[in-house]
Image 1: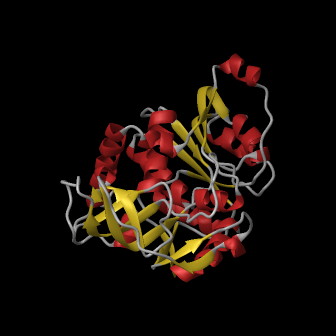
Image 2: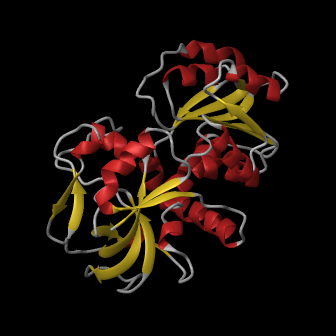
Image 3: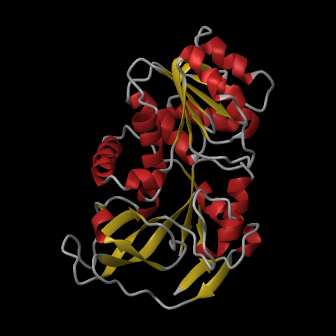
Length: 324
């Protein structure tokens, strides 16, 4: 089978197309013929050796796949060859075939396209649990979503509104991206490349600040976002896209009972009940037409390096997908 592998950390050029043996499922594993692969910032962090946990080389990126089960291990009872599924795996998704635990598979209806399905699990689960599990969003609260035209951002805007947020403030770097955030349901649109954007956030909340803020850039964006928090506000960190760590003084949170919270999806994945209930809720929204999935582009597996360049250039909108 074909796969995309890296043997050294570095830029997109380290992603190489290789031929390798097709894996064989054992126990609770299934072998999936992949039809769509989700591309995420975590993949670029893996490639650069900057991921939250160590990345051992050689390495095949890819945690989000959709396709057809073609072979099952001896302990599998819940699915069979021919079933259409989407799932999250730890790695090795940039390939024509991959192994997955049968107990984590999400079945797909025949009318659900693989490209649509693969746009939901990682970024949908991230948006859902950043807002609701870690951010503890309650109806009537205000939410600030950075990178609101990205994969997590577009879903976070919608899920915040579906969860009863009274106002969703979206930031992005261009008018085009802000228009997309508006289409997703954002109430206030702010270009964060312009000076004083944090003051506009405060103006939009009559000086009170936001109850929940989603932050994935790091550096100065983090520090300015902290200034936008309301009393009892929660700032959830789920990435450091800028590569810049932030310095702040924890005691500054005390005066207004504020919180800074970290989010890492693999920890959520260790709680199957959380995953099943949140996926069921999101699939329900999807089937009723209440949740839109934004596909930013579909590319061949061989274009993996170019897709990483596009993602890190911040010129894209919505979900980027690879197809073997």
